Image (cartoon, rainbow, N blue to C red; front, side, top):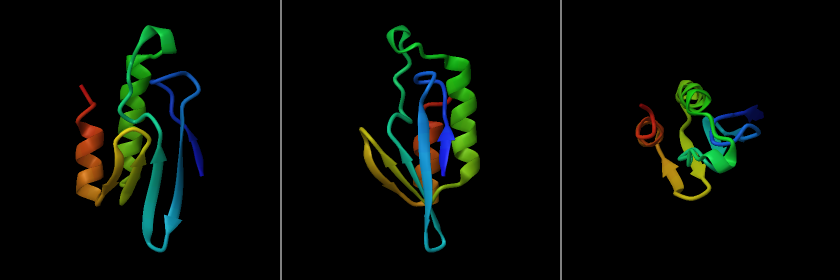
Length: 83
């Protein structure tokens, strides 16, 4: 499933799929960055981070930080960018 994920940039998106019972999240720029040249919006970014947390993914493939395995580790990674 493709999900609109604004914040890092207005058109950011993430993809999800199921691998058996596990939810896999493909997120290129979950970490941001937030920068005016990208038309970033911090408020949208924070809402989007919460939406990712709510997915309760088992595995995150993050474009710059690699593979984060396990629900707790995925949640901790996402939370580390929340205000």
